[in-house]
Image 1: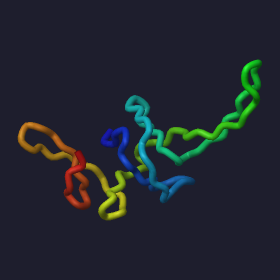
Image 2: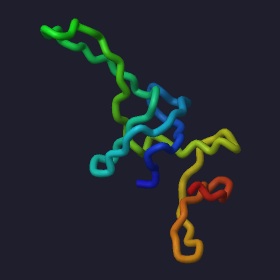
Image 3: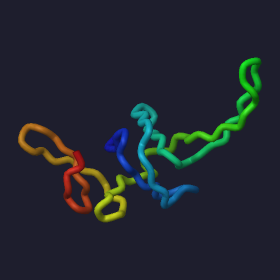
Image 4: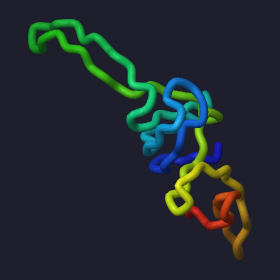
Length: 101
């Protein structure tokens, strides 16, 4: 998976198409990510002795194939590739060729 935590991504398909946000969590095993402000779900909190009942809103996971890396310079999504510079492997934006890391 080429997307990492703290990357800014744009959603390319689904009910939140066009929204962009920061990646909060990446699950490499299932290939899903959690993006800030995208796929917001409603959770009902049951009342306990210490807390009142509450309705919470939290982000749900989406598939990593439904997002693209958001390039802030061009203000568009871009696929990510790899290039070897010296002894290290760096991520690049395929649309502009600029290094990400």
